Length: 191
Image (cartoon, rainbow, N blue to C red; front, side, top):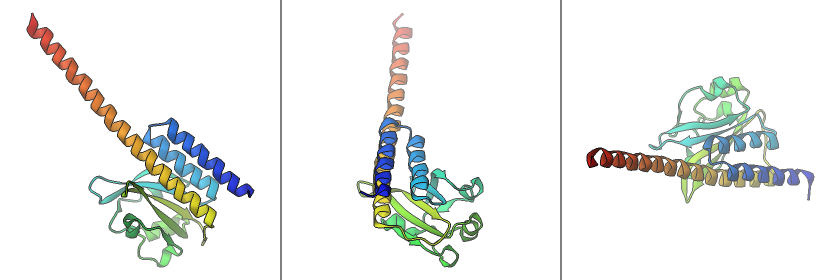
């Protein structure tokens, strides 16, 4: 096995450990974006989560990009590399001449030459997008593409688990609050 492939496997194991050890969605997303930048040696990586209405892509985590670029404005799901939200991988090799980019001038100013946009889905439903930003024109190897694919898949599962946990935690807290209210009501009316 080539040393680079061993590094991908080691990194994937590390990401899986972080995902399995944390139900905090921020930690899950951060592990994915940081490891993607480091192992693929790219300019940056951002995970966008689709809002409930399916209209906006909201930054969940970003690594390697300036704060100005990350906060450049709302990313519209109908203007920014739309086919990714249909489940397609999209490689944009020349951001300057591609109208699928919503913020071309800002990307150029950031030093981004190309973007790989990968859907993140759970049970066939797109929940977000993994975007990899590259400073030059680059083609990813089969091994790199496989790494990106499994990272997006395991990341999607981690995101879904964190969301389920947050929902259950909120419901549990509401239940405890309701039980306490009923207890207090019973005590105050039982006298």
